Image 1 (cartoon, rainbow, N blue to C red):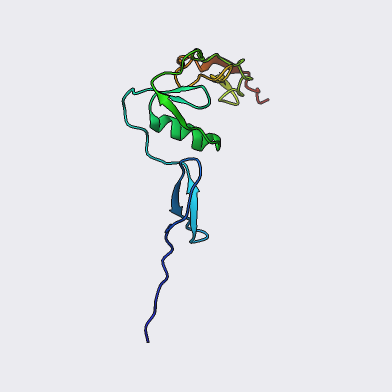
Image 2: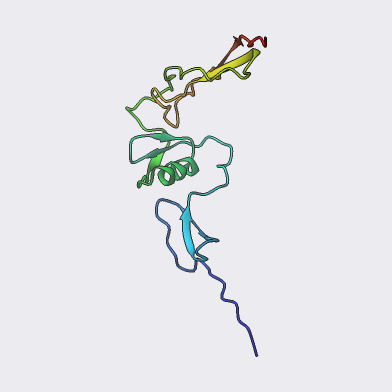
Length: 143
């Protein structure tokens, strides 16, 4: 008696928006996801048909996949007439609770670089995304 194990494969399975096929462990069938490996270092700009300049063709493809919309390479080089959008900080979030329930501790708050979010050729806001401050909570005296 022979036992055959059917292994799923991507075969001719098509993934839109530059996605890549993989075998889903739950369904044991083909599924799509955005590529996991980072784009190679380098700067060979391409102009997308969305009017945005991307650092490389790989970055254009990653954006297309993440946004789940079709972006094609319009031409090599930067897009003309559209300036890059540089990131801006959002408002600070609320302070976290004090890290201790009694005595001296720390509290934190955060903000995002999404006001506006930088375009692929724009600058990120910087590294001031978190603030930390001291806090103190009085300890109850036992009588």
